[in-house]
Image 1 (spheres, rainbow, N blue to C red):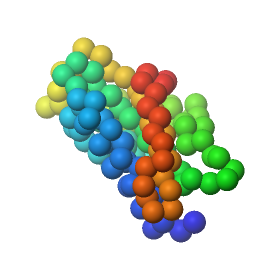
Image 2: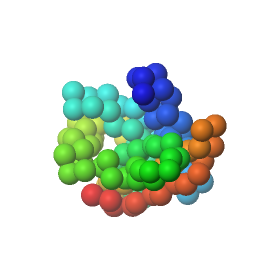
Image 3: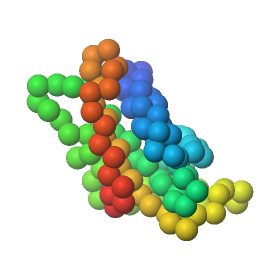
Image 4: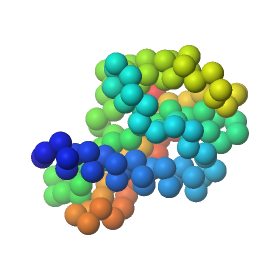
Amino acid sequence: MGSDVRRHLGQTGEDLACEHLRRRGYRIVERNYRTRWGELDIVGFNGHTLAFCEVKTRRLSRTGGVPLEAVHPRKQGRVRKMAGQWLIERTGRPHADVVRFDAIGVIVDGDDRLVSLEHLEGAF
């Protein structure tokens, strides 16, 4: 799969994840925050909780790949480092009583339509 195709798939999944978070009362504070460890997908805030969301997107297939399997311990460590850098750099960020790490798994069909979305709050 070419990088443009992967990028498009990832963007589609993140767009769907943002829609999901907004429906649940979150404001999207930032998307695609780049660091030396990688990219923080979504930072959302609902007035109480600041959620750092790692989004994994897959196409529907017969093999049934599970997107959230890709949020392994090494990836979790990188997300924590990125979140720490974000918290230090974003001094004007919202104050949150709770900081949480979520994982959102998205499956889309061949036409980029949502098939399923799994949101694990406090996944790691």
